[in-house]
Image 1: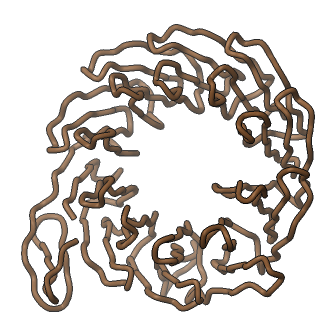
Image 2 (image 1 turned 180 degrees about the vertical axis):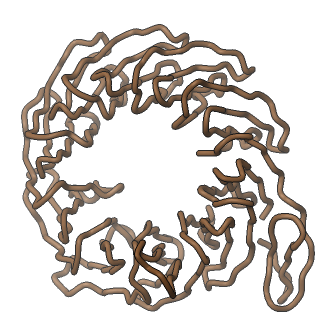
Length: 434
């Protein structure tokens, strides 16, 4: 976002503005991509010359200038769409449909998999894993030929390859995760007492980590031997960056736990004032921040000192928390409680590590998310108020990116010079030059 002196740019007439209280100048309107259906997502390709959009029962590809290249339609409502590695094929899935399309708009294959819960490319974009409520995961080639079926006793809720792609890990509501070779031979079974919610390869694919409704996280060798069990007071959750410094970060109820990864020994327990919604490492992995269902944030230095508690100006439903590593700022989205009838605030708060509130950014309606620019010098927010907004790190509003319906998603391009926004209500995706 460019500024000269105190002059900021705005536009009033079409779809957005850049603003302050001094002067105004029109800027170019965005490029509009008309999906003609609900929009669930939009993404640039690798060199940002094309855009893939999907939602409802349609998928479309566009040039970066907004020219429609190809349109694809399905019988089922779609959950996701993605290019393969060389961007020659598009994989979509939803309902009972897993489809491969050529990028020229022609159908390539329909993969028969009822009640699919997910599908993904391998690294090279030559194989596909799908999994679902028919109690199976299935591996396919890029022509749509079924290669292998991996059978569980109940819904399969996840599947992934190891790095060498010669083994496949699946996990299921049948209380197990299972390790297979690509021919479908069962190599190991990792058992829990209740549903397995997550499994992943760790330690250079030599071990498997599993997480279950039975209140435990377990570490296993790939041969199926249990290394350790970490027991929690309730169903545990793992931080997205849970592996740091040979330790594991998890939480359940009001407690955050740090475990020794090699032995499973509990290193420390961080007790919060209410149930924890999330936790993550910050400040070059020297501190942990946790946040709770009533929007209390705590910064822990792991030196047995009390945490620094950040003074959230209002209580509400917590949203995501994001960390700015360059400016060492913490951002939390806080929306009003459902039962709120008046003076209901929807705000984004930014703090420094010293506990000082740096800025408060408000929308008049529910805020769906927030995202720093690639250079970490601006913040993008999007909301049910039919807008996305761009802010300085001091809380100055730079731009309002307007839609005619709730803005349910937004993303920066790789250098922060453009923003994609999309609305499932006005059925539009917009490309904005920032």
